[in-house]
Image (cartoon, rainbow, N blue to C red):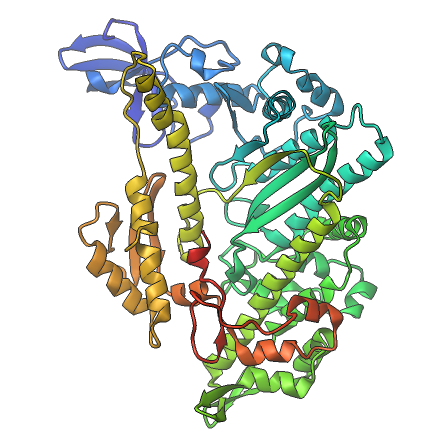
Length: 619
């Protein structure tokens, strides 16, 4: 290990690991010489000249002798550790090879460019599973094995696509779906019908992206919802349909987003539409900065229209046409944009609409009486016994009611879209087998983290535990039961993080409890966390920040700001507003709000509000 000239990796605080060669051994330490990495010559953090260092002998990792293109399957590496994995992936990435295997797992490193390795010829090559070992690593091998196992075992298959935000999960999911969608059509009995189904399934992806994806600080096309896609096959293994279940749409993005980020793509696509189309939905102004819901934080200039927005609008129209979905969706999208422009003025602390013209435009698009709509924003009905009172809103209450309506409209619209996409793509015939693909948010750490990041990171903790269970725990149990000798592998187990979040007295339980209190508040919730988890190794309270807490996740430490936690968890909409929408003259709006929701047992309840299951309990 400490022989002279042995090639090793040494830890580095800036770039994680640096390649080096041992010069001499000094007992418990060794002297090494590092080598510049040509692939990192433009990075300031990486050493550009050879340097000598003295490091602890037990801190270095042995290098593998790698070909220029790296090792295709990392189970074949002689030394398998973090440094070896990173350097092997880097070697393959710089060789234009984004895919690498680790046994049955395919690791993809996002090249941030489209490579010519996804054409029909390549798709067909990987469908012959007997030749997969002769072909370079590819995500097509994963879809091909799933299709092959479905045919040979008769069992449904699942593919899990995981990774941090910006890793390329959404594109990978689309590549997998495209391969699977065409895998069964080579010998299809009815080619024309099969091609029509394939077209519908593939068109559903860009349509869902338009309404569910947004530009974030780490990804220009970030999925802001989780998606479980089910591809349906008949007894002859021909694709006959598809279905999509969605989870946890990031609703708060409708009204606010961070610096350099954007709202959902569809808003910008609509503003980039032809003038005559925008005139139909009362949007003569195409400047995103004219709409407060699109401005983001003060002084942010990252919301201008892109050249691609107009092209993507045409793609969205094509998707709607292919799936037979009404263009009425754009009227609601426009109404949401206008809602952000509704301002209020105070008269004796009672809010009044400052500009009636905007309210009139919204009322027209939603099929509402303008006067009734204005009253729903500026007042609320309160009941005491048999009596009902009209209570005026303050400026803040009116603004909150306006924002809540915009968020609720978009959420309902998204759910409606998913339902109608499914109605168009779900098989009307018998479904014999299914292949499912899970594409869910990657782990997120931003400058400001709120309830949405907690939900996303909680979901990733669950996936990590699934991985740990399948790769480590279950295999070790199997070895023990069969009496197979094995060396115990130490691995990080995140069960204590899950217990902190989802346990009987976990964070989500305390949040729901605080939401039930008549005067529950974010501050009281934060104080309750401090009292319960002060001794928990995975929980901290920042000393220099108020109304925050820290969780030590498996992927890193995240500070969460509790402002808005209760509102986001209860997902509340004023009853008066829902009842008003129930009286809309627009059939489309009525389909979004078919009837006033009624209180249901085990649901959070507050007087004069309509609440569904809390967001936290939907996991």
